[in-house]
Image (tube, rainbow, N blue to C red; front, top):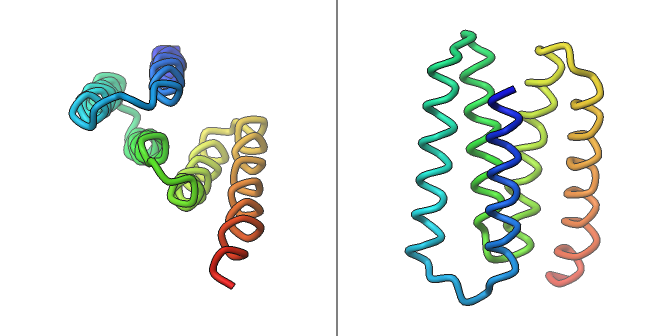
Amino acid sequence: MIMIGMGFVRSVVLLIMSYKSEIKAGVKWSVFGVLAVSLVALNIIFWDGFLSVLSMAVGLAFLTAFIQSKPANVRRVSILAASLAIVFYILSFLPVNAAINLSVLISSIVGLVRLDRKKKV
């Protein structure tokens, strides 16, 4: 339950930051640091072996995706984060969450192919 709350806080903070284009890089990285430390600390407090390590990797990957300024980089990092999340949710016996992240993975791949590949050609 705490991890769900942490995910909610992370999403709200990063949503607010995404609408404020004038946020300084220092503030952005400070928020990233606070959220990353909180994520790692909560995973250590509620340690569950390999699943906690995987949970940290998923959370940090999504955090990294959210702080990217270029949409192409967001999609690239989201592919990695969603792939890790799918593995995490399958190992945690949460198929609905795995399916949700499968849609994130598919949309990131489609966006990468349709939007970013066209620019290079």
